[in-house]
Length: 286
Image (cartoon, rainbow, N blue to C red; front, side, top):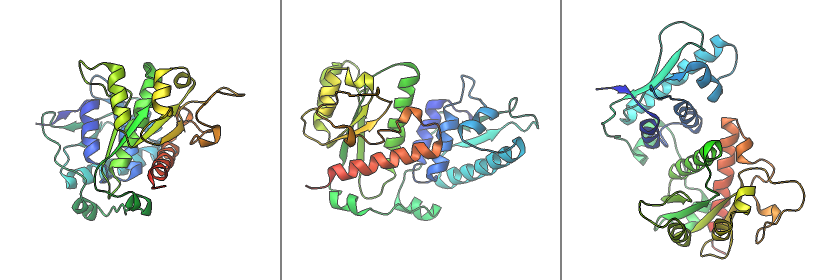
């Protein structure tokens, strides 16, 4: 029996739609899913803004309806129990609500396969860089950042999730992404992070003032280790000389365009694509 889904249930189904939805559709569904409240609803006005449906109310709502139809059709064809619903009342977006429905206890059926890719018309070719790396085993990525709370933590979580989903959609290689929060119940936090970092094939450092003053996590993710380091700008650094050792300013991906300053879905997608390109380059044989 279908009912409204909460954020976690939506995110679970969205992971199964990686490679089924286009990158823009995937990013828009994720943005709308983040708006769902405790009653399982979102305000249409907020969804139009978060997913960047521009124009006057009529034009934006028409675009949203077309988007909704396409997402529902792709989820249905892929066997994923997710439906984007919208209040049928013809009222202003400020007073109109939407929600996602599905069977809360049902299983997510789809996974991204070549058959799915063929059915949806989406192809993700094996890039030369990935082919050169090889696909004999999964590649492990450790994302190190200064664990925080509130809005900054949510932004870090959104970046890591988008990176994880984008890597999962690449054909020819299996990726495993862990981060500073990946600590099991009962584990010693620092020991767990040391272990995950030591096992990683590549370390992604989310550079921020907080990380640079965090001591152990900074050393863990930027210091000597088994895998190369990919430093990326998470938040803006102070003007003037900054102690980045052992890194250098020119090495930081998106040095002048940090993640927390990006509000556009398209610009965030470009940011993640650039991070993935840097990861692939770091993993190439030297």
